[in-house]
Length: 570
Image (tube, rainbow, N blue to C red; front, side, top):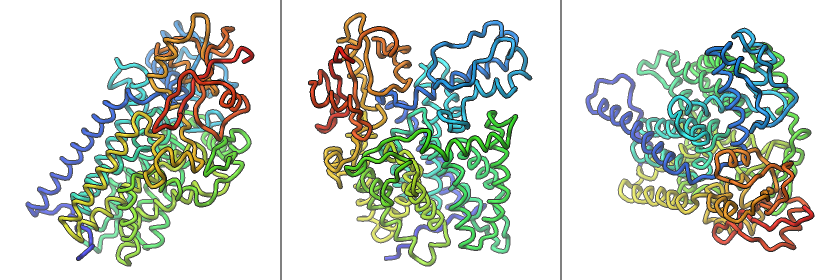
């Protein structure tokens, strides 16, 4: 059977059938976006606040105050009182006085921007601000929502839009089977799905990476007149904006153009050079436009950002357990094959098999210079980037999450090949693969970050292999919070083994009623520990060895969170 994917629909064609297919493509994309967004909104309350979200909420609170001040600086300054307890990490930058923020010019000064925009500088503020800008979209659309779901709405919108874009892109090139497979593979990949809800960095970067890659492919697509070697300029601009936003989200985003550059050299495509050149200028302008931290010091700001992110081995090493061995990353390097192992372990089996089939397309001589070749280059690059020596390797697959977005497109290519070989049985096999992914995600709720493939025996098998069952405090479910609320005596507090400021949010929102403040003077009633063996301290190990837990959150028989009676000596 012929395994060539469906041909590209020529742009601007007047053929009624192709025009109808084009309309179906966009209607389908809107429908997919809406359905995924509905799924995200419905499932959002089931997902616990995670480690980094408290920090994000704190930063967004400062940004929100800055935008309010811009509207009426004098009025804002008259009522301004610097907060004493924040969710953002404390650093050496002092809060501004009222007399420093009573004009718009003063609100744009270096010191004021440094406090209101705690981003893109020394740790703990190393990430640029675009992910937080996405997070305050909820302030405009759903201002009546609670703070956390409001901050999550922007990332969920971007995640859902990306699912629709994947549908449209795949439908146009490889047909409806590929579109269905790719958009579902994006949506139900448990790590993508979970992070797609969170008000954090990584899913925003994954969405931007995939969208920028698709825009690059659109920009360099040959025109009907093969003699025209100019790119499609609108898509060049889109590529530049998205690449700029990606760079303004995380250091990893600065490398987004490298696979595109390699593909351009490989194919000797002049459209690619134009796209990278013009798109690069657009990206640079976008990067600075959305990063007030650098407005007054455009060179020094970039320098501080890179120094901060490239010296994390000194400032912020994080332990991780991988296949039974503890690594202090990025001082110590995970094995070179860690990203391959992780991909097999956390990808649903059906999606993984379709992806392997899609990789086959890459080795066809006609495909290496095509869209499939570009996609495979991005996938290989992302897997290799996180596998480099002394790169951050903590928190499971978060550090190379965009790779799973690219993998969804590869699965779409695999689905198109399978259907091309046998339309009937290929469609059945693709449907079974998607069903397995959907069921796997459903069974992993409400802790999809603890999903592991049946290939390794699920979560119990992964724990036996020496992998961390959880790492982001996503196992602290509402049921566990309710237990703490009901069983913590008056005048006692809850002590956590680690202290992200997310616990302050739980107090402020009323989800966790007992005090969590370490310096409150209240004795602890409970010691709460998550099952992250690589980060266990001596105190954690003592509790595990000597104290019987009063409450345990488990998944498939594997503990995720223990609540121990606190020892009086602690």
